[in-house]
Amino acid sequence: EDQVTQSPEALRLQEGESSSLNCSYTVSGLRGLFWYRQDPGKGPEFLFTLYSAGEEKEKERLKATLTKKESFLHITAPKPEDSATYLCAVQASGSSASKIIFGSGTRLSIRP
Amino acid sequence: NAGVTQTPKFRVLKTGQSMTLLCAQDMNHEYMYWYRQDPGMGLRLIHYSVGEGTTAKGEVPDGYNVSRLKKQNFLLGLESAAPSQTSVYFCASSYRAGVWTEAFFGQGTRLTVV
Image 1 (cartoon, rainbow over the protein chains, first blue to last red):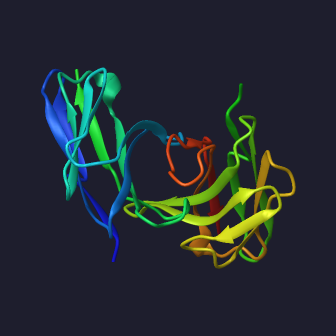
Image 2: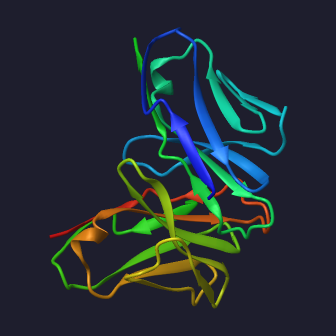
């Protein structure tokens, strides 16, 4: 069964304290893995798409990496404004556009 | 450029009542989706549409109906609301066929069924 698991559920960091969020997945062939950011009371906002193992994408203090079984979202020297829930989603090979499986997210809190 | 707009933003329904949630996008996207988000369960797909006049069932379609009479609008209907439908509902749209990328989400509708 296709599955996406994110860990930890919640993470509290001090401003400037770097860390990583994990997204492990089990799908029958990966077509794409997506990272989204969601602020309280708002819809998810697209961050990255990764397509193959070894691929990396960067945006400001965020860097997403992909292996054959998991993806990491590395946060370097985070600021309070990076506080949000980060969602991971995958699409399996051969599936339709509808077959996107979301993880339950990691709530990240950055203390000043 | 408004992106994806959902109305209403909040609603309280009594069990058995009906309502329609409206999603409008101004990006000329072909694909539109309705998701529900519940604590600890992530986003789950209810119904989706790959173009005007077409709809299809997602992961959790029971108790919901949809229509896409115009390309820019996607309506989600609850014919007889149940407490289990208390959730936050998100609409999304995307322009890429085949690979689902850079989908744009609305702000959400928080629905409570009492």
